[in-house]
Image (cartoon, rainbow, N blue to C red; front, side, top):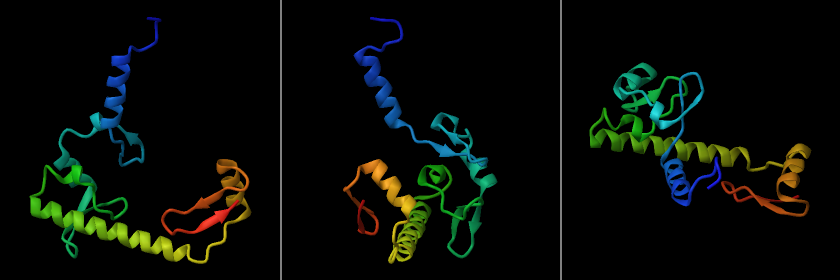
Amino acid sequence: MNQGTLSSQETQNAVADMLKTTMWRDDRGLWRMPNEWPANRRAYLKENAYFDMIDRVYKWKSNDRVPPEDCLVDSLSREELARHAWVRDMQIQRDVEEYRESRKNHKPSAEELFEMRAAFGPGAEVVDVITGQTYKV
């Protein structure tokens, strides 16, 4: 085997490891890998989130969004996790509805059309998968 190349098994292991990972952003906006997750999740949550008394869920201080389940699993009961999941789903649903409403009468700019042509080729039909709108570029 040449130096610097991986065996088939090493390649499979590397791919499997990559598929297991999920990146996250720290409080400075830098992307981090899971092995960099703070050892004490409760302390991290306490430092970077607040408890919203109206929705009765934790939310990130930085963006008022409900943290993902893996950030909460060490700190909350099943019922509390279910409530957080429900509020998070409502946030996503609201965001999608707002996006659809804002794009209802959207006409792509010359720059957007240029980018679509560059990405998909002239004459391609591009679909916004959230709104269902199609554009011929």
